[in-house]
Length: 216
Image 1 (tube, rainbow, N blue to C red):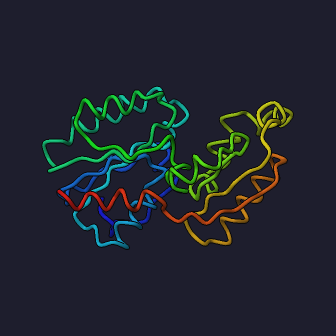
Image 2 (image 1 turned 90 degrees about the horizontal axis):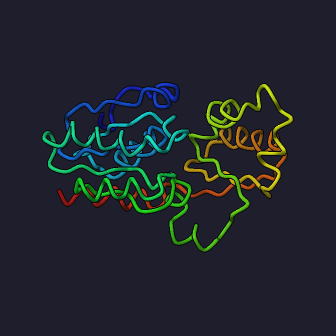
């Protein structure tokens, strides 16, 4: 899929992913949670040579499966493209995904997770915020599906303190200036009983990394 495709559904991106349209000469294989941001960056910067395939965002609930899913997607598509890029950070795979990308000879975006590269890996590392719980635009929209329901807080709200008692704040890393999303993020912080902070990050390192696809 290229930047002029149909409207995206968060539900589709969470559970099914997004198949490529096969129109570009470079393929980016990404997490479904990054689809909108990648399409926006490509449109903004004229990266019309990029085709996008997204794996289901819900894989983040089982990071041990991300590496195999990425490897399968690369293997299936590599003969159809001049180059393939992987828009996943480590994402809880403990280095497994990087090892797979190195073996397959495909470039992977640096960083431990999307919170880091959205803010900028150097900036994020310098903050050293071990007690902050983060949301992105996608997670602000999908807070119930990715946080409340998987942790069982919709059925057992008394577990909130066990899961979140050691966090000191919720930080919303905003890719866009959307008042409605800000309100959703504030509501999420209130549900978790955490102070709220919003940071406007934009696309961070993701934008610069996607620009490197011009070299192919």
